[in-house]
Image (cartoon, rainbow, N blue to C red; front, side, top):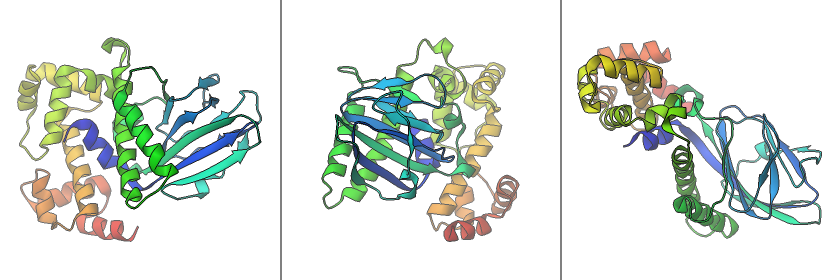
Length: 307
């Protein structure tokens, strides 16, 4: 599994929600802060204004996609000077729904989607993202992203048998396509920082991809450096500067996060989980897991089953 796919499958938890909302002028709505959540706003018809947590109003038109990875407060309105009413959207938990709100004027249709993040397992790649990612619609750009948006809108507008599964899968696709598009549209690589720079760096990107594809392998700094095409010392310096952790510290952390996912989502015995993430003994794995999570693997699984 490549790094982006691995990370996105790892951090999302719970049931996603989505809605197709028809707003009619005059309208303005404020979405309160929701730590531990991430959401999309996609303009399907008409136009409106995004009122971000920082900075001035941003005009949105048909096909524009906005991703808010940190659950920060933001507003949407037909006019940037419009007073904003507090939204109660957080009180709803439907996988998909449709609604019509606002006045009787010009219509704007917005696809609004979101999902919860497991804050105990949040990957640093999400923390490195800006508060708002705005991808303007440009003719011929990001065709996969546009196709996912069209399919998602169609499923929500006219649910049919199997729509639950289709919507959940399309939300995963939308997340990945948004991140791909954002990384692809960054300026020169030298302007990137943190995880964005790590994934864009050919050498460190190769090492991360190899590490994520086979976390159980007996990796060393030297073998990871060879995979990246760098000397041991040069690789260690570059990896630490971009990722924020030394290579083997990140490997250990990722192994334990992956083990937590296996404990939550499978019935595999603890000893088998230990082997699948690279530990030679259940005892060593249990000690490392307890240092990271504060509880033994078995207890962690029981707690996860009741949460």
